[in-house]
Length: 148
Image (cartoon, rainbow, N blue to C red; front, side, top):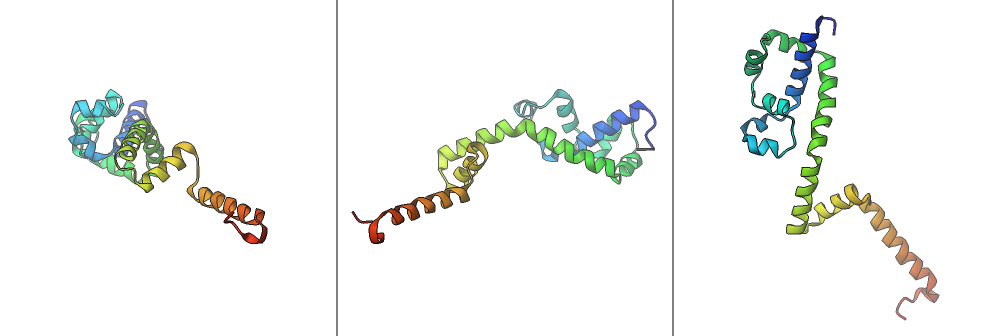
């Protein structure tokens, strides 16, 4: 961005993009709970600032600067990257919780998700493969009689 001329402002812009991409409800979590999410201490510090006003006070930047940044394409592009980055760190927790719920409830939708994501098996492929086997068995039997 043309308006950012020094490294300090670039660092603030980077911190702001990270802060903007974090789930705001995390600010209600305890330190212990946040540490359980495998988040860096810098991220935890940012999470504890739930409002732009607090961000501005902490980093000595004006609200008008943040508003200007909010309207840039660069911020939007970086937000997308940041969403993916912090979400990757949470993936083991999500997988663990998915497994727990499958073991507790055994519902088909979670099992299907597990098979698709973990095993790499597409549910539609399962149906087609099963149908193919049935059709093969019918073709092998004379006169389509499958009651032998």
